[in-house]
Image 1 (tube, rainbow, N blue to C red):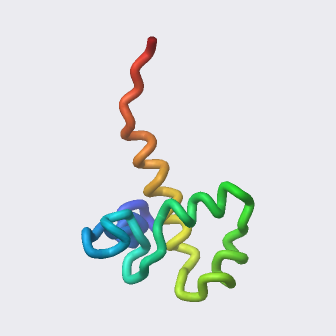
Image 2 (image 1 turned 60 degrees about the vertical axis):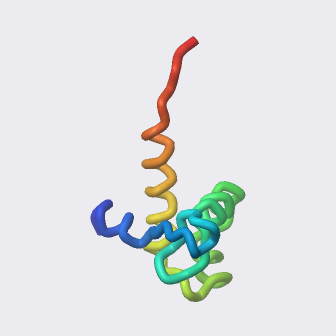
Length: 77
């Protein structure tokens, strides 16, 4: 799946989770998924714990986070 299709799995709506980025059609915040991956939760475990998710949702959350970080401005001191 290409990056544009993955990123379409992420939505931001003011009425859902106070406008936090979530997996489309759910109330699953991107930051929660990324944090769980950071602490070692496997894709398989996430899919078992959250049966409404797809593997592409997890990849989308990671890609979205990477894109957000890459867009940050860095100032050297």
